[in-house]
Image (cartoon, rainbow, N blue to C red; front, side, top):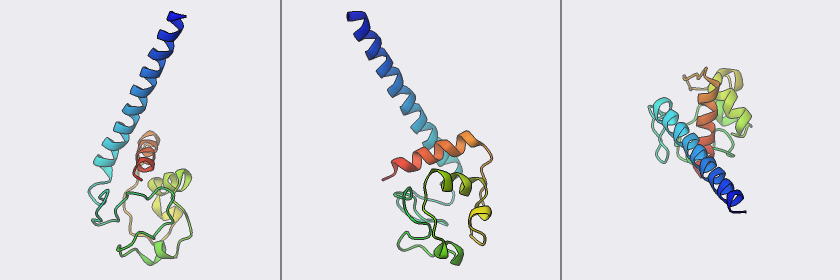
Length: 118
């Protein structure tokens, strides 16, 4: 019984460390790839991204979105963010986003990070 408890506690600790590593990977990738244009709480060249996950595109208050983004009806979730980060023009032609991320794991880490920014 004691060994089983120790094993479960060890597993829980390892899982929490792995999850923390993923969020820091996402934070690091976000810092490296996104903060040149986006702030978390303040807009820069692009809109602030806190609360972006689950929000409709082009809807953050106080940011001058392109007409293409304002007219969009998509919602930012896993699939749309992945496609957006891969090739923004394939999702919403005529937008102002220039970045493309070819690395699938980097995109996934950034998306997981964005989910945490509530």
